[in-house]
Image (cartoon, rainbow, N blue to C red; front, side, top):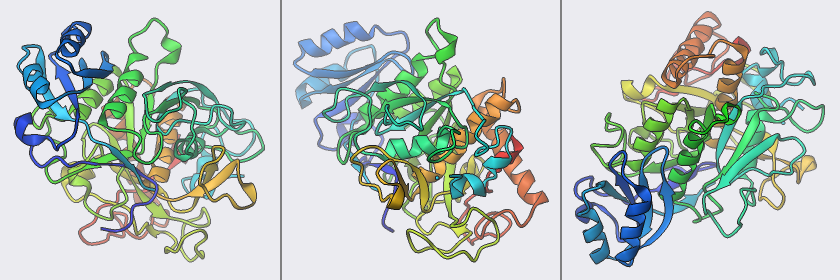
Length: 437
């Protein structure tokens, strides 16, 4: 396995997907998924009475709880008639533009908002499910958020930097300073599900999905989150898409995302940085999401030949760290975007190399950096019209087919490793084209 760069990777220890007594690893926290319509508060009371601790409640993407329980208490909880299934909650490991080269490479400056001309704005609600977003950054339009209990800080502000970097690529304001995003001025929601290394879990990720989904159930249509950008992932020997929204392999995150997409949220997720097939990774393998691989680009132009900047790689080829698809079912929801040496916004005290632009801006690499290019482009597609009124599934299908059509008509646009210039046994998808929207 190659070194992972720039993705929040939840390392799953799940060795089986049968009954929970045989499936969970020796951890003290669990996700309790209840049957639809169950009384979450009542179940929380029963759980507490058994001596277990309830530290998250979910009522929108699914009905359920995150708990800490002894084996004895867990056994009794599992016997409750309102419980659909129980799955392990596992700890997180955090791996790790001007017109930025990545935005330039997908022709964001040719889109309807013309990123970089100092005037464009895309007022679409986009959630950054990550380490949070720097709420005071002058180049970001942060309108709200949620702290899902990741780390000690009580707010949804970003004290690590990863989420702020993602946010800038999505929607840095076109204000003539700093950098500009693919969807300039997007209404960013800081959903803090990871604090730093080891601070976050399945429970906090579920909290983020639950919050995003909740915006579609209140009386205020102006806060409905349309796009969720997730640079997070899980992997393990028996994890992946069960093609049943997690009900077969007891995957609570899959069930939640299925319900969230049904509410109208389009999820854009990172393929991962393990340079391997992502068929066993989640949420990358879910057919309900748009999965993004990474290419290396160092000058914002097609054609190859530019010298590398922050890290060694080959211009206009698939990034050497990027995971990829092999299964036809995974290829159907996979596209590519720039992910090597991406300049974007940085949070105070974050460990991001920024050169002369530090500390407000910095450079990172990873499929985490490729993902927000596509998240911003989806927001742009919704706002400019081509994706307006479409379901998340229709949006994903359109983005994939539009990328293919543009590359087929402009064969010099893509990169070594795309379907027109394939790498045997590895599918990275077509490079997206923001100029279409």
